[in-house]
Structures are given as structure tokens and as C-alpha cells.
Amino acid sequence: MAADGRTEATSADGESGRGPTARRIVLGAQLRRLREAADISRADAGYAIRSSDSKVSRLELGRVAFKERDVSDLLTMYGITDPGERDAFLDMVRQANEPGWWRRYSDVMPAWFHDFVGLEESASRIQTYELQFVPGLLQTEAYARSIATRGRPEYASDDAERRVTLRMRRQKILTGMNPPKLWVVLDESVLHRPIGGRAVLRAQLEQLLELSKLSNITVQIVPNHLSGYAAEGSFTVLRFAEPELPDVVYVEHLSGAVYLDRQEEVELYGRAVDRLTVDADTPDRSRQVLAKALAEI
Image (cartoon, rainbow, N blue to C red):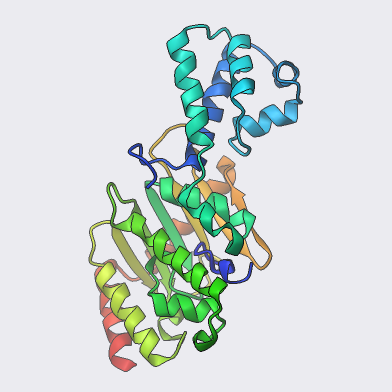
């Protein structure tokens, strides 16, 4: 499944340009470096904050919220006594704990999707491969509604409409300040799958064609005769400008999603992206394929 949060249908932030999810990871990485520089084990650090080494591990990976008292105690243990430096860390704690704008949609999105939206907003480069649908960041409202309602947009519930609103809100990252580079590789079958009917598909392809002309968006189409060779399923690779943030691969499945950030895993998907971009038509040729598909609807 794709990184478009389609399971939402079933289940700018401040000046820094980083969302709270990214701030947690950056803060955790900095605390890890301080601990290692002080030659302190995770177990000892955990004891200092009345917790365990596994809790410290989760903090350093940015997977849980921070408490100011815990960070203050860790800074003392790590020998950070300068008031200005401590205040900077504690300010990061407050920023990292701020709820993202997407939290208002918590009732209509699964818990495992929250981190993806936060990371997506913080990414400098997004590479996505899709076999079934146009990715959520490029969907029209009508196309998204057809997916959210399982093809019955006339019976859209309030929850379904909120999921569509969430998806449209996510798209603002593409036209805001310092937008990420979005590189989309689509299976050719996506262009002929009549999601929402002919009129909806036509409008969607028209939008896809227009968006592909933006300088920060690249769209490539994998022709049918090369489909399925480079990758078995949809996935998204998120890359970040900050060195503290590791590249992340996001893969959705029917009941959730996995986040992969180990180097060997990211490299495997990176090679798949490379193969896909070679197998796919060039961006210029892909626009011609899109135009041809439009003419045939």
C-alpha cells in the first residue's frame, strides 16, 4: 500500500520548517551524543530519570514524548551546566511536545499514521512508488473522496469528509515555503483505473499533468511491460536535510504500517528507487503518456 494515508479511510508548523516529530528525533539524537560523550550507559541514564534503559532508547530514537524534568536530569548527569545551553535543550523539549496540526484529525486517522504525517512535513525529499492509486499528495478532492468512501461518494460520512480534508491539508507542503522535492513513480495501470468514474479520473489526470510541471515535482510512469520487476509493492522513502534525521522508508499494509530506518533496509529500497526510475519513462515522456491517457478517457 502507498504512503498516502489511504487507511485514513478505514482506520507549517513554525518558522523552523520542522514539525514536532522531527524535533523529537533531533533532540533524541543530541541527547544520545551527550550520553556517549560522557561515557554513560543507557541503564545508568535510565536510573537517573527513574526509568529503564529501554525508555532511554525510545527517547533517543524520538519515539516518545519528552518530560522537561527528565531532560533536565539527563543534562545534569551528562555535565551540561551552562544555563544558556540547558535552556536551549529545554526549549527544544517544549517545541517537540507541541501537537502537530494533524492532531485535530486524531479521531479519523490511525495512531500509526501520525508519525508519517509529521515526518512527511519535515522531509526535504519524498520518493514514492505507487501501484494502485495516485499518491495522496497529488490527489484531487473528488478522487480522494472516492477512495475514502470505497467508491460511494454520495454517501460520504462526516468522518470520511474529515479524512478528505486531512489529505487536502497535507498537500500544502508542496506549495509552501521551502517545499520538499517530490519524486513520484507510478505504475501505468494507475492511469487507467477508473477511481470515481471517468469524470473524476479525467480531472485527476489533468491535475497530475499540471503538477508534474512544477519545479519541485517529478512524475515518471512505469510502462505495463516493465511493471512489477523493480518492486513488489508501494512504498515511500523520506529524506531529510538535517544530519540527525535518518532516511526513513514507510510501507503501509492492510492493518498498519512499518517504518524502516536501518541502513541496510534504506539502501535496499534506495536501489529499488534507482531501478524504478530507470525502468520508468523519462519525465518528459511520462507527460506524453499522461496526455495520451487523458485523450483516451
